Amino acid sequence: MEKKEEKFEEKLEKLEKMVNELESGDVDLDDAINKYTEAMKLAKECSDKLKNAEESVNKILTESGNEEDFTAE
Image (cartoon, rainbow, N blue to C red; front, side, top):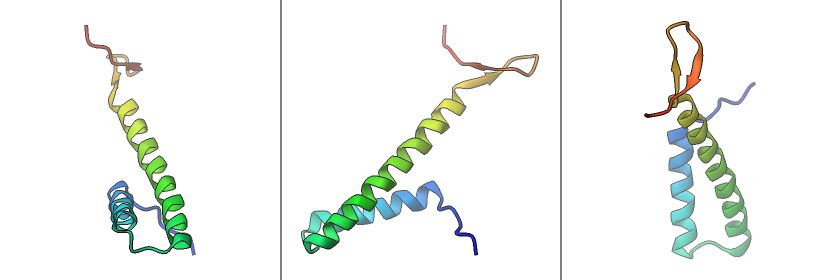
């Protein structure tokens, strides 16, 4: 069975939970290392998603239907 891709909000919520657990100091070293590694992976995925969204938003369609970068004059 194919694993469903988590939504951005789900990844962000998971990341926040991991950060809170790590900040609490109640996590043993091995678990902390695993959580930190997973948190960094999630942070990169969220960052990449935001960057892609920003690039998409900054494109406009011209009258001819071509996409162009948006620049404010």
